[in-house]
Image 1 (tube, rainbow, N blue to C red):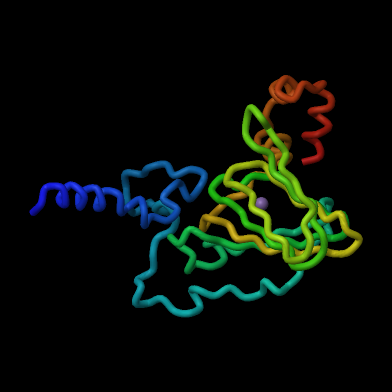
Image 2 (image 1 turned 180 degrees about the horizontal axis):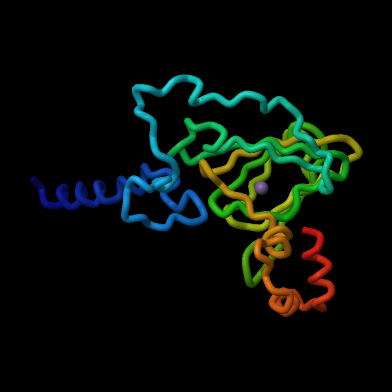
Length: 218
Ligand code: MN
């Protein structure tokens, strides 16, 4: 065999697992190793059904035509279709969400630790944005109308706000079977147990009383 071809073949084989891998990064927040395989709950993701036993129902989710209930403080509702709702998504590196907004409803600043989000507006008008990482922390924002598509890069803080007087609906695709959601306010001020108010007061340059007030909201 020509040695150059041989080297090229070795490089191709080495590169192949990267090129064809989906969601090869962590698929849940934590995955502590266990010694006894019988006590295992997950691999990186979920265990697989015998492919011979897979049926159409495993690949089907129904009901995304239903409006989410937006009767809450924020006036928004996210309906997720991840591997938890649609088992056939396992290992495929993709998920979907429907987001409903009441007038002036907000999907508050949040992060998807494992996925980029691509959103399209089906109804209404949304003011959306994301903030780039340190040191710039640049807000990139836009008012979206029906049919507009916007992308929120993986791991960045982003939000969507319905600034219209009518309901709004959006559909998002996410680049993980389990993208995860970290709602900033809930994580920071509503963790369980609480982060000490001294730490939050210092971090946010706030009076402790203000921190206590914020923590009481979550
Ligand atoms: Mn999002």
